[in-house]
Each structure stands twice: as C-alpha cells, then as structure tokens.
Image (cartoon, rainbow, N blue to C red; front, side, top):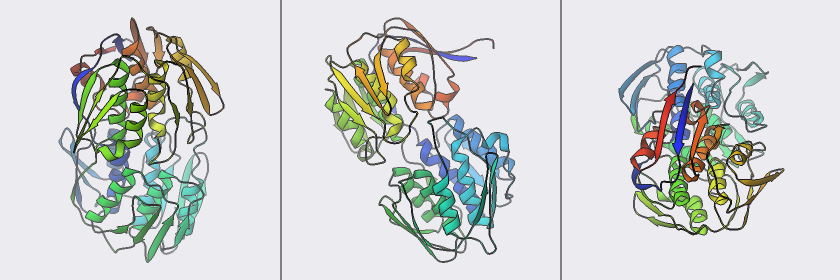
Length: 421
C-alpha cells in the first residue's frame, strides 16, 4: 500500500511547470483509433489514466512507442474493433470514448461499461442519443455497450438535453469520418473540446465551432497522422494556485493558458490572494488573512467541478461562513468526512456545503475518495498542524503528474512511502 505523508506548516514558494491536460490527452489518445497512420502526441501527462488508456489500445492491436517521458507515438493502423479488455475499460471513465472512435471507423462498436470516480449518477444517455441520431442501433446494459449500423454513421443534427463534455466528444469522434455533415447544438465548450477538434483537424478532419455551443463536423473519407502537443492542464494549474493561496506562499506557474483559469483566478482573488497573469504563466501570492467566498460549480466557462474540493479546503481556512454549491455532480461532497477528521467544520445539505471557516486543521489519517478530493487532502495537509497520512493515493496518481515531487520542489515536507499490504 502506498501513502503520501505530509508534515504541515510550510508555505509554498518557487515555480512549478504545469503538465499536459489529462482531460485533453485521453480523448485525443482514443481519437487515434480513427487514424490509420502514426500519430505523435507531445506534452502527454505521465499519469495512471494515460498509461491505462495506452494499454487498452495496445491490447486492441495498436503499436505504442514511448519516445520520451511525455511524448508517445500511437499507430492504430492494425487495430481491431471490439477487442478492448473489459477489466481495463472498467477502471477508467474515459474508456467510453472508444465507442465514438470504433463507431466512427468501423461502423460498429463493442465496449465494456466504463468505470471512473463515483460522483453519483453519471449516465451515458446523451451519448446513446447522439449515436442513435447518427444511425447507430445501441444496446446497453450494466456490462457492455454495443453499437451496430448497416452503413456506418451518417451526418445529422443533434441537440443535447444537457451540456455534456463526454457526449460532445463522443459525437465528434463518431462524426469525423461520417458521411455528410453533423451539427451538435448545446455542445460543451471546455478547452479540451477545442483541443480535440484541433487535433482531429490537424489529421484532416473538418470541424468548426469548437469552444462555442454549436459545433459543425463535415465528414471526411480518412484521417492522416500528425504530430500534436496537448494543452496545459488548467485543473492541475488551479490546484497549485489554491495550494499557494492556502499556505500563504508565492508560486509561479509556467506552461499555462491564463484564459482557461479565469473563473478559478477570480475566486482565489475574492479570498484575498493576488493573481498576476502573464502570457503563459501566472503568479499567485497568498495573504495572511483569507476571506470567505461563495462558490457554485458550472460547466465551462463557469467554476469547474474538478476544482470544487480544492477550493473548499481554502474556504475552511477563511474567516466567516462560505457556501459551496455543486451544480454538476450529485455526490461530490464525500470528501467532507475526511476534512472533518482534520478539524474542518462543514455541513452538507443536498448539493450545498456550508463551511464555517477559521477552524485550525490538524494532521490525521485520511484517504482519497476520488481524484480531486485526494489532492484536496494534500492541500489540507500542507496547511494543517502535525502529520497527515493519505491513503488510496492511486486515485490521485490517476490525474497528477509527480505531485509529490512538484510540491517538494516548492518547499513542502511531503513524501510517498510504501507499506506492506
């Protein structure tokens, strides 16, 4: 069993280079299924979800070559449809992008039901709606999802009932090689949607409107290989920004796109910290007094749900009562019980957490209940008096590239240790 041990009390100082965005890398990796050629993907984060996704493609017949720590060559020329390993697929939510990629390339798909963090109901009904609109016949149960069609996907108009990142991406993947034009309305606008469109267009696709709520995909006959660099991870950046503010430190984050961080920067500034933006970097300077704030998560460009647990830790240190409302997932407050072990005063009512700030945090044995909640425990531990042991850290390693090493470089007293099972 691996754990992260943090001895709190040190403020963070120095600089940290932000890795490529996990949520952009994963759909682009699965998009390579559409390409009967070699793709070289740069700025790929060295995280568990990426390694797992590459193993899924390798088992399907793809040739995977790691050119460096953060660069990988993917050749899906000889990949086979329906051959993904069910046990691997069930370990990661993003594996459902295989559905769009297989349907787009082969006119059919067969993939085990995806896994991932438990945030409550995360249905794939909008994905199915999109596949059916494109002409697919979908059979789904708790074990697997199958798509069949007589002639492959056909261009169509799709209006999503809710804003959904996953379904937007899956329809983009399925429609890239479809006959005719597909228009997605009420599409998600996240930066990784734009990054996927840019990657596919670099391979020869014809996609416009990514980053708006209407995306148009004109189907092409084939896609060719390319070299492409993943955008910086705005959630990783936001995490270190909150850590700097919470510890009263001063941290420069490099390899970022400040525009992507606007909602996070605004809330951090509301708590009293200073955020200075430059072309491809930001500097966060914490203050001795942290002010209360109210946060509600929304789809991009609103405050991201993936930053909610980290922000809650910052508000635990603020003067006064803060309110955090979750507008995306219904079960995102499971980490609250772990923070209470450290002395936090939080009450959850439905999708709103009421945080009575100003209570000193102390070290405790806690666990990561999901990816973002796990890194929130690290931030809390940095600010706590005493030593904190964090277990289930494999969830943190799903999405953070060398979090222990990066924090140590900024002055944190943190280490990863292994215990006998």
